[in-house]
Length: 174
Image 1: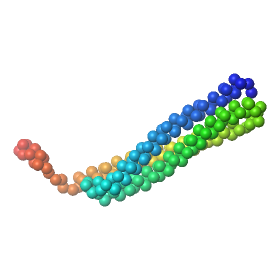
Image 2: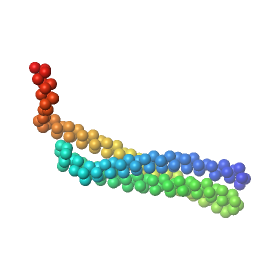
Image 3: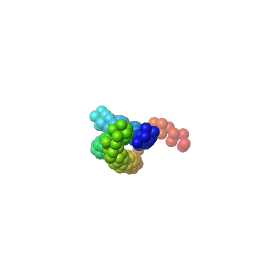
Image 4: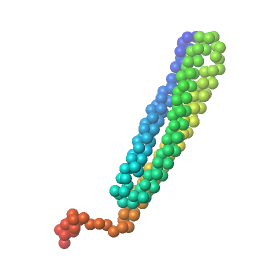
């Protein structure tokens, strides 16, 4: 293989490296958001914050359920990020072995293709886990909204307390 062909072939995996790098950045951001949410919920559970609010036991149960779901999401993202780093390594290895094949006179003939297929397979698996995680995240949003609406319904069912300002406003109208 001629030098120009070798260099051109070595650059081709760079597209996969770029795509994988972008996914790694977004996945790292996703990890940070999951970690932040876990820390916030744990802090709420440990601080006694729920006891200061209405329906404290219901809130605690909801937080514990959310923590379980966040753990599942965290596990999925851990698998995805591992696969992405392995794919990145495979694509870098593809480029490296293309260069080495040129230097060694074709000794490593099939290794670049094997590494490229491995990298694409790992990228594919990572994307499946990221789709599953994104769907879990959206289901978490739905659970949060359903819980909020449940609390609102319970609040509407109980008698409301009137404050001094509410009574003053009612007095002005009469």
